[in-house]
Image (cartoon, rainbow, N blue to C red; front, side, top):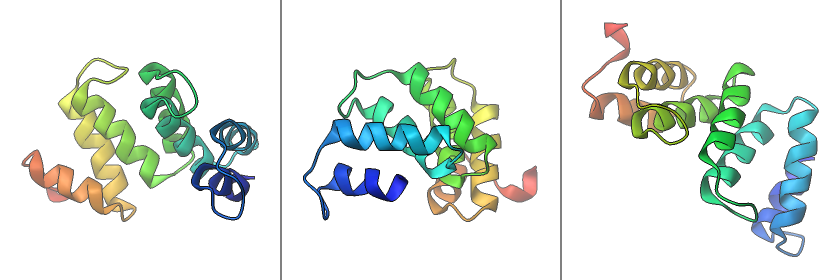
Length: 122
């Protein structure tokens, strides 16, 4: 389902259709696909085919992070760092960047360096 959603989102092998992408990512997320949960968060944060809604994006990032998705963890950290959909909280941002970094997310490592933190400090 998530692969079909990607195809619709990118117009790769299927006509580009953000509504179809959203529909299929939703089905995949409801079935427990952590990548789809992350992608739904991104869709809500960007307002791609749906109204921009940072609180809904945060909800999907939390679900994806809880299911072990490193990209969702990074995005959750970014939400806490920027205050998008949640009260700004650098400690929570560092926590989620740390978790994402431990799972190999390179953006999280950059964010930790930018914030002057390191995994060894935690």
